[in-house]
Image (cartoon, rainbow, N blue to C red; front, side, top):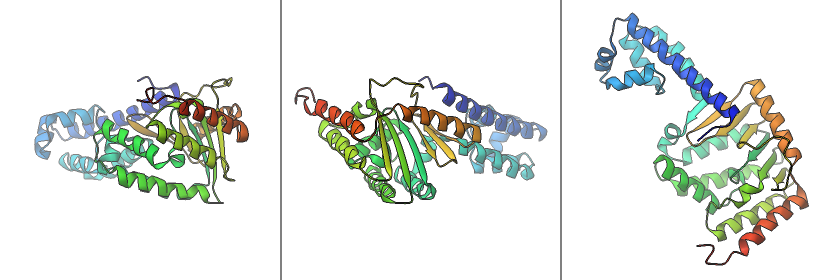
Amino acid sequence: MTLPPNTTSSVTKVHEARRALGLRLRELRRQAGLTGSQLASSLSWPASKVSKLENGRQTPTDDDIRAWTSAAGAPAEAEVLLASLHTLETQHAEWRRILRSGLSPVQRELAGFEEKTKLFRVVEVTAVPGLLQTAEYARACFEESVRTHGIPNDVDDAVRARLRRQDVLYRPDKGFHFVLTEAALRVRMCPDDAMLAQLERLVALSALRNVKLGIIGFDARYVISPRHGFWIFDEDLVSVETHSAGLHLAQPQEIELYGRVFDQLAAVASYASEARAIILRVIDDLAARSPEDGL
């Protein structure tokens, strides 16, 4: 998959940071007079693990760094390297590592973060945002994650956790501005009856006083292309999801850039009755499908 330029830049920076961490680990090993095989043997690791860590092909864990610095006779270096690792992890979070214990813990962690956020600005290009999903639509999304990443199947718990997260929509101290492309309404993540229920829910949620829902119809003239979805949390963080990882962008210039992109996409979206007219058109098109077409 070819990533959009901004995402590619972020991935490149993450790779460079991982590579720099690996080079520092190699330097410590050499200063200790150890070969890669000797270090691996002392830690009961396969030699390939040392090579992957040193060449930035694998992200070390906290325990990996502590074990490495201890074996290299440089335990005092551990804290500096751990700080570098945690900065890297904040910027780039690999889904397989995050989801190792299942989907529901991630939903609970998101709920805690959303509790602190006052303004949510969201662009989605191919899917309905989690905060607006019905149970069946959410289930289809989670089942896709289980298939893609081979993670524990706790879909039922994850669906319940996602629906509990949606309580935040009814908080008067929160503000939400969602911008969806018409394509996001038409990508069929679940059976037709479930998709119809999802679309009807969007119509209902568009009436909430603190929710602003914009739909960019197929006939819209873009000023900037919607290359990928993203979430902006207040002025603190931008979150971008790829198939392999979540990118968390916290540099002021990155947040400012995504704020400008959001504003330009929001400017070409339709709102209120016009947005509902687009959703209802999609509902009519889907409802008109014959049973044979829906197989």
